[in-house]
Length: 359
Image (cartoon, rainbow, N blue to C red; front, side, top):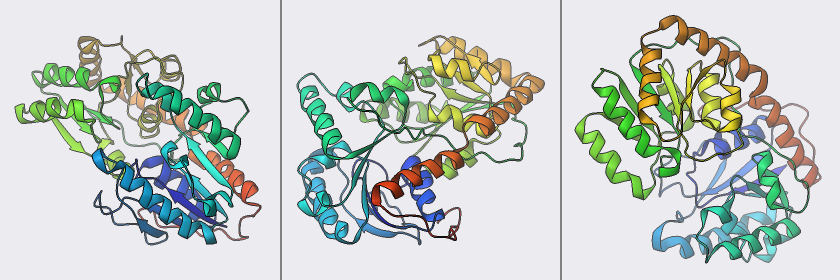
């Protein structure tokens, strides 16, 4: 099966797109053409894919990026069995050559809710039209409420090693993922300030939204935290390994378990999370739940873990066991590939072709 994958709004090394979905397709022996902003993000594509470079959809270049992506899709859909899109904007006026192929939209978030009131009706119409014309994959069950029909869910789980990781050490709290106000960036800066006085370092690994970048840069200059910026998911998790705690201080009440929580648990890192219902339930034996917007409570939780090696080791062990049982991507990868094969009318080769971990 030949699959044409496209994003212009996300980083080419996005964990769900590249490290999970594309890798699953390659492992199953399928061919992948990947249309993404490689040069704009200074990314070297994996050797096993066919890369097509397009501009990133940022600032005033959004319209130009969309036109370039549509041109690339029109060209490469001609020899694809299926087209997999990751940005809702790509659904706008898709070229006819693309519409002749099965098109799958990977739905990862409530796009309309993130927009202002003026654009929200347009986003809802786009969702409705996308559902009528294309196949949908959902990243979490809760997203199904925005659509009329029933659609398969392929959650953002993670790779979990069979062997338990080393016990976490003291003195370091980490965060892996995009940094924004609603993901607790302000709380983590305040947390870092409190912990710096106690000799505990906070490391933030991920890109930041424009509104929080100045505060992050100022905190880094102050020396109270380390901000790495975007790091590919596999390398980011290697940096996080052995940390005292993994932070998930989201400010909303999302019903799904955040991917970062699953990743911390898979790597044996005790979790400190705000009381989102799903996250609070899953970390009851592998982390500590703190109130929304309470940097002081989060700092106390980190210090408690930093000073108690036995507690860190037990929570890390429990988290790894839970992740291995419930959050193993290999099972979801098989379902993901099977859905695409069915929609494309193709089957997997008899002998899957493994790929190298880092492409």
